[in-house]
Length: 129
Image (cartoon, rainbow, N blue to C red; front, side, top):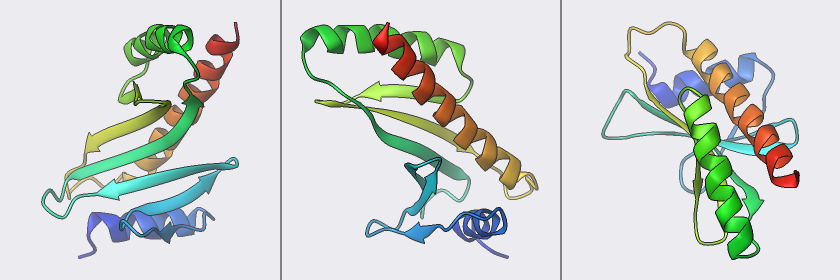
């Protein structure tokens, strides 16, 4: 039986994406011009992380304060998706557990991709207001 990473790769290829494996072993794919990553775990067969890095660069303390407010708002409103800030960047991520008996992996991956692109769009809109 294929592992979770292989199942993700197969699904993405079937849907017309061109996934690759990066230097860290993560699945890398382009979605609407954005680079996303999918990570599985060698120690937890049910863990799946889909993330969209670098969605907003933090230029100053005022922007950081606004980003905290926006991230908290979006984290409350979106199921599974979350926004987090690092030193000078902002990222979006979906982290979930999928049992091996779950036959809807494609729907789950698609929904995570949709959530992350929506969160990025809403974050950008709120930051420009």
